[in-house]
Image 1 (cartoon, rainbow, N blue to C red):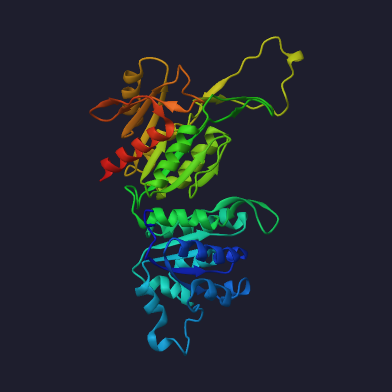
Image 2: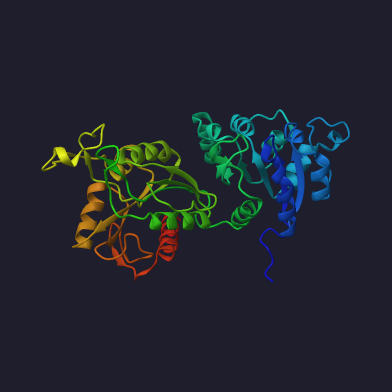
Length: 399
């Protein structure tokens, strides 16, 4: 059997004050099953949710809590742990702990350890969905990512407060899987990739809309491939019914305007933008507040207006340092139209495909990669294989 990538790794597991702290017990067991050696550091808040004795028993080592411990300070406990660690993993990472890390605080053992260590840091957030989506929390996370901190999760679902939404701590096995990827650096490690996927729906009235046949499968495959290559990934998804790839941050939108707004919020912290979504080119000029009745119209005329061009906004107006990859869904003259689109939108690459067949909604894709000086036709393949190949090509170009 092949040895785990975590075998022999020294991992300091930080446990902060969250109801999800109970999962740290199982996480320790799973990490040790992979051959990792664990030392646990708890905040005082964490000790209110799970006892240090439990985590000491599971890790096989005393649990450290106090920054100024009379029994340990002669050995400078936080410095010793900082030097011992190959990785520091905080799971769960509460909103308060994330905020204090972003501020560079060192007023407890865990944050002091994070300041003192030269080892990489990963955090697995866990908090109420409203706290997770709060602008201050997102600003804190963006600041930490810019400093190279890796984010694992969170997941979406039922929460201890009785609400539903994003903010659940990932399950221990999923955290272990993410750590195994981080320990062996992928080709996109250190990059933040922003991806759009799926269609947009432009409302006509409360029940009708203008949309398209995009399933989102290609964009979700790209998010999975980028994450597996080590990137920090944000996925802005139109109305699709697909599971979120593990470790990927997902933002759900419906209209082109909402997608534009979400991209503009996230792109400042991104160095790669892949616009895979089939964004509506036009929307109704006005939306009826009540359902349009067939009995009152012999003929219905819709006045349409153009939507904002998201790719152009990113490549020309917002962040010219971002590597921008656009997608072009065409039904004829694919190469000529793709080349013109690349020039018009100012993006680095265009991935063009002929959607006159079963590409939209299907599981396979055949694409034409158009760069500044070349056009390369890729054979038809499953969308996850196409996604992996594109991620590899982007990594190669950036290196």
